[in-house]
Image 1 (tube, rainbow, N blue to C red):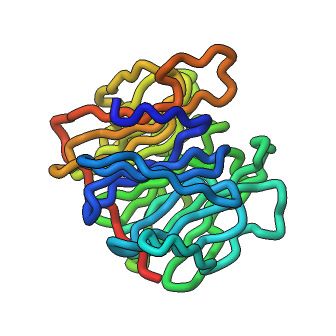
Image 2 (cartoon, rainbow, N blue to C red):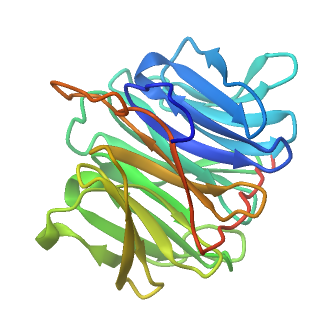
Length: 279
């Protein structure tokens, strides 16, 4: 275990190399945590449901909430809105998100009660916010190939991870294609991250694991965790060879002592350094 703080809905783990610390969110309790490798866990509370972040620099994050994308100054604590995000839609909130290799930030929305097809995937790039894919129930698995030519995403409710080719500026250049169809296995793709070899690591809600898939979608192996609801992975640590994973106790009738905690396990693989958002 990396951190014993128990989140109702842990999500959005983000390794910050400049700070040598992991950030993550407890969405339903409107909180963000930061834990350095050599320090104590710190907590920040928000007014709105907040779910994901991208690195701007050592002292600033772009954070996604149910109403906006905002710049959080980690030194002063100030939060400044950059652009509204479905602020006129009380049904939805932000969910999974990640910065892309071209300096953009992809963010998914979903219904607060997982209403069918209520969500979308958006991209913020150099001041422009554009809806990419509408009518998604539970947006997840947003991550990118090392060469910046492919993006991945999933609708957890559909149990299919999709891939989409990107142009030189990071915008979709074709229709999405099926990357991994998990329906026959009864697996629920949640958050995901791509390692330095181009393999996708998928947190699979309800299956107690993060599974690794080759660039062609073949299953390779899985790492098991001692909780059922693993929600999102991230690579980090000094050599980017530690796999972190958030979890949740949301909806569990009798949650265990570790449900909702953040886990860390060494691997023989290396992740990509998280990309930075260009405002």
